[in-house]
Every structure is written in C-alpha cells, then in structure tokens.
Length: 130
Image 1: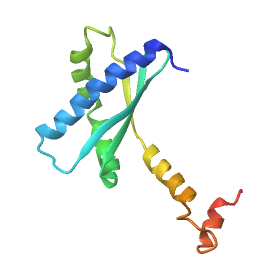
Image 2: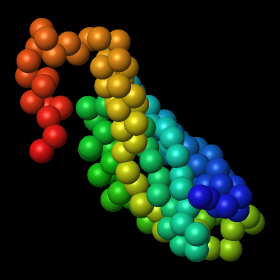
Image 3: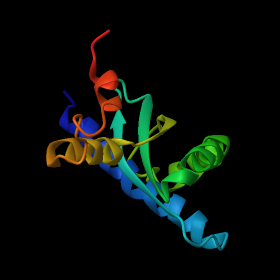
Image 4: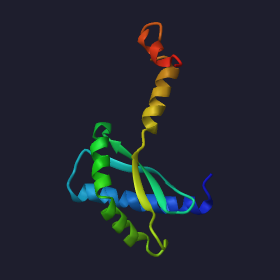
C-alpha cells in the first residue's frame, strides 16, 4: 500500500515525465507516435521510481522503451531541473511498458464470446493447467 507521500511524489514525477517525453517527440519532429506515462510508483524509501509507459502504436513499444532506457540519465537530469523545489533527491528511474490495456482487451474478448473454444479448439490448450 502506497503512502500519501509516495502517491504525491509519483503524481509530480508523472506529470513532469509526460512533459519531458512528449516534448522530445515534438522537438524531434516524430509523427504518428504517442507516448504517455500511465503510472509512476515510488518505493517506500523514495529511491526508485517505476515508470510505466503506454506507447501507440503498440508495435513501436520495444524500440521506444530501449530509446528511453538509453536516455535515462538525460531524462533524470531534465526531471531534476523541474522538481528541484519539490524534491531533494530525484529517484532512479526504471522504465517499463504498460500492457494493461492489452490485458483488458483479452479479457473483454473472452467475456464477449469472441474466443469460442467450440469453434476454435486450439484455445483449450492454452487454458489447461500444467
């Protein structure tokens, strides 16, 4: 369970990371790409922030994640300049792809009957317990 302080710091980091990442996309003239920060969770000692990114289109997500990870020191520096009045020390950033929307879509498809095991018996193999 996150404390109020962790939630507040997470929301401050999230807002500023969105500005930084979307600013870089605009500055480099990249079109047809949307990067959003869906969640930032901060550890209890405030030393690590897990940043979950949503990338559209989804097929570019792995390459965008690698690009963001390779530029983590620059992103952290930009972030520290923005939050220097609110935080004494900026947490280390760890970036992940947020695949919760894909997961929700799979559940919706299963519940709406689009995945019918009678018509497609291959689905049953996937659902068997090992």
